[in-house]
Length: 232
Image 1 (cartoon, rainbow, N blue to C red):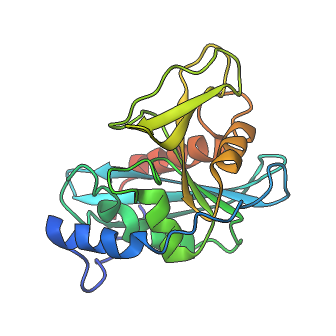
Image 2: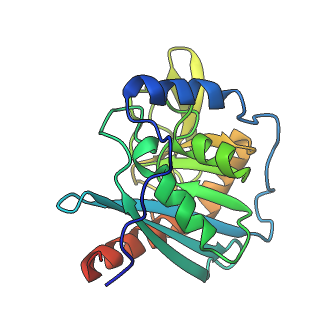
């Protein structure tokens, strides 16, 4: 049995209009002119992911810290919270952010890079989970998603490392990245304090064997284990 869910923060948005207003306010704080950590640098890469227990109306967040060079697990943490917002496309971060912040607070190591299973600038209002989390924590963040959301792209080349622009009209909001030869691409976008080039390079470095980064795979696995144990 794991911890009982934490209550929501006081004043957390409860309507679509309130949440959109928060996004509009915080979007201007996203830092886009920093390259971020150099690919191959020695740092702690943290993957964050969430899973839902719909019967109990709770969300489980997991954070797994990996050595950025060896990809060995350094530390794990979990937290459980109430689902913080109704399901509204484009506002999913508001369902998860309080619990994700709680799980990051439980880590004793300092993340050099946070990898979100989702989007950053590849978002209708250019403020997905990775950007939201980056602004609130000040940490370098990127989003690595499994699908292109509402955006378009041409298939990248078949080789590992091939990319193509992820487009909203003529604007590049991210890149489709082939992490393994002949495997479907992932969709990388900047969150906060990382360039798109570095976001793609780190996504590739963190995916030596599988389609998804090891950070995401480890956090997803931990979420599933916690749900299997049961929520207090």
